[in-house]
Length: 294
Ligand SMILES: Nc1nc2c(ncn2[C@@H]2O[C@H](COP(=O)(O)OP(=O)(O)OP(=O)(O)O)[C@@H](O)[C@H]2O)c(=O)[nH]1
Ligand SMILES: [Mg+2]
Image 1 (cartoon, helix red, strand yellow):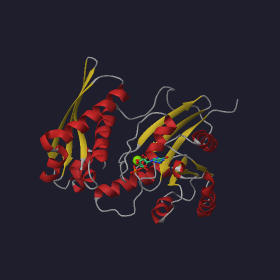
Image 2: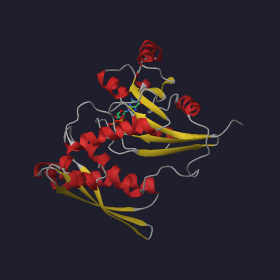
Image 3: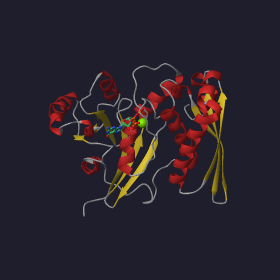
Image 4: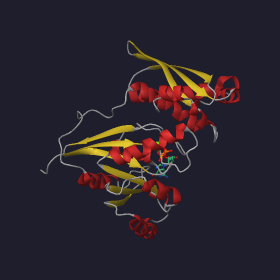
């Protein structure tokens, strides 16, 4: 058998290309939150895939975006850059048939010396996979990629091929984590993320960007996890929208988040959620620190 390999793979690309969906598909567990809105991911999320001959430590990151409006957005971009730069390999994710200025800018943030594998995602949306060939040819001219692999995070198409290509790019090394470890994040982190995902999935276009989730307390009570969370918004009007008529929207989001938590934690969850107004939290150093952005 060939030598064991192990290393980190930093996932990069502009927002909304399917980076988090791909991480989830690669590790076979829903760890990183997903929505149809750009800039869903705000944190670095590690997902570990352990195979007999290789351990893959994937790091999902926020999408690299060209316009930085606040300290918050600059913090997200810093994270996006770090993940790809500090890993053994960068996995650059683009959408099939779409390579624009934003993709080019995101790619430019990956240092020239870094090994880059490109994943062309969402190929399930193509009528005919052969239509992709000219796009792949054009992409190959943009930069010297170690490999270009068309995939679908949605259907799992070509995921084994992508895993094989990544293995070849990782250094020979013993495993860095125990074989049963899936992530380096704790349950508290995932509790906040799963609730934030519901805000992205349930709310209109602008509102999710004005929201954050804080976990106020997380207690094990026998086999029950008791979680108290706060959704931060910037204005009273936003608070009313999040809560919805008679509290219906908040109840729906909390119920969906609780269900996801119970699946991920494999146990019962009590979830209490409050909504609070904190003006301009995206530029408030104290809140950004509390949320782990600074
Ligand atoms: N059809 C199709 N849709 C996909 C695929 N992968 C992801 N999506 C969709 O693309 C949208 C964005 O997916 P995410 O995984 O959140 O994308 P992301 O790159 O992590 O986005 P940010 O975190 O915002 O940078 C969601 O609506 C996904 O369901 C795929 O392979 N096929
Ligand atoms: Mg994401």
